[in-house]
Length: 281
Image 1 (cartoon, helix red, strand yellow):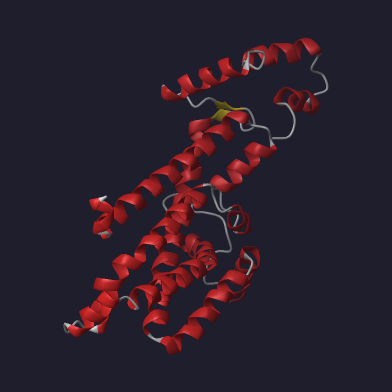
Image 2: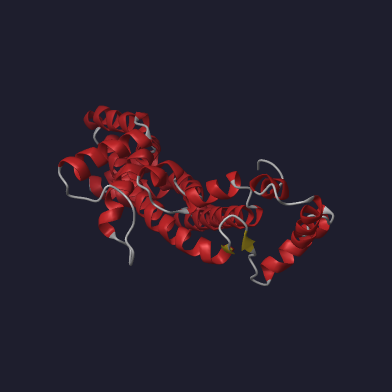
């Protein structure tokens, strides 16, 4: 983070004297050793005291709640759509080889388009030209589904390629296994072979990717939130780091780390449920 918070405050108000700076350092505990400061912060955190944001002049908890809800609505919806659509495209490519080039083209296109460029194109097409959807912002009350459509679509397309490619590769490898031929020989339908026999085994690496994406998206999609003027974790965290708001940045990063750990734990538990070999270990 750039600079010392007290130096930033002094630069913003030249009337502050050296005595004022010393008083501020003592007030914020910056004159104490690092270990003592960390223990004080951690003990306050365990008591539910998240501290005060110097940049926004508000309690950190009151800033995090609306930002996190906005990001969960955006990133959670985009992740779910990208996962379902990506797995469907991967299954299509693995089960119908003729469709594989088309799926590859869609994946390459989704991966190659910059998020900010795609977002601007969608705004021009559906908000400016057609006038069907709002160009940005968020609803004053509730989720505001119409405000979510364009940013969710942008973020889902950006994350679609990885799921499509990994699903296709994983399903192709699984469908080539000898026990899949045994399932076909026993009279299982192609749909049953694909979804009942092959998919539970092929889903293991996809779950890990989804867990990592969930953690990354919990930090906010800064570019998408900026293009569509949505308040969220990405913008809040960026402002905290650039504004040297240590309290807010620490709690926001801790929240992202917690979501990543919980998502990874959920993926591990789902893998154990899908793969009996992991339960036996």
